[in-house]
Length: 396
Image 1 (tube, rainbow, N blue to C red):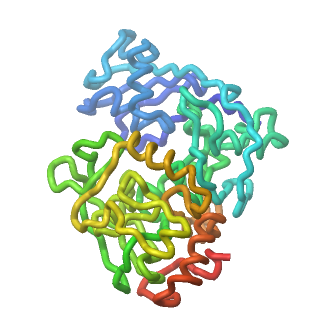
Image 2 (cartoon, rainbow, N blue to C red; image 1 turned 30 degrees about the vertical axis):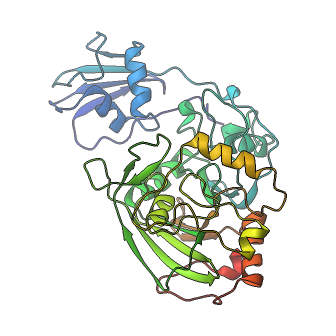
């Protein structure tokens, strides 16, 4: 097996802007053939796969990058004839321990593994916390394949403790995720995400009765003006274009099930967009959803975030206080936002075949839907143009 400490490799350079020399995977030399009119950090980010701009800036500051034998700044503009040397110390995969965390595997072959991520699971470690993540679980899953289980995954992203991780879900969002086992698969699927040819469909339970069949939410999103941890609809220079298509799949007394298709991938996009419509996700404390137990099913609450065209957001500490109080209740059905990545579609990196994966709901969200169907129904399953999620496969 190849040495998986090789955490980056040159991308094919077809602009003719430099001659690339390699003295082992950890040392790359770029000899510029023309003025590229780009900052050093941005140039290297576009030519070295798996290294983020922040990581490159740190390497530059540490002296691991030289230009013409001298220590540069990240902002150094590269010119014709410049010689850029990059030395990246190999990270240690041993820092990420294998942990016996159960994971549901939807599909696996020699190129990829697709999982149905559970709630309360962060996708990958950070330097401040190397435990309890999906990556730790994958290290355990592959412990019989390699001396260090993570050697069975793509080496791209190793320097940021995320080998094989192509995309992420929030800690409490469940559902389908694809992880790459080879660098080639990582690059090809990552490219599909960049070109937006990967299709992702979510299911959410929201407060209020949404009118079928659905619509398009085209509202820019940026950081919330006052709540550090949150995002908001912003019609100023800080808002980035964000588009979500929603389709109403079932309606209950006081609640709705919606299918959501992302056309952009902003942080908290679904949660912000639904809250902006006045239909926050059930149990999404930060964006004004309410926890759901037996009393709330019997008498649907007026959610804090139910005012249309206003982004409601709580500070994280305030949300924690609410959950601490709610934690004393033993009737709660759902203790996290009712959001699930139900369907994931992409082209297989080796065969090119279009693949579709449906991740069944986990027990908590499935239990909520069963209760709403039994006690508060206002419609059966609804059809909408473009709907993809098979509810029979989703809710078992």
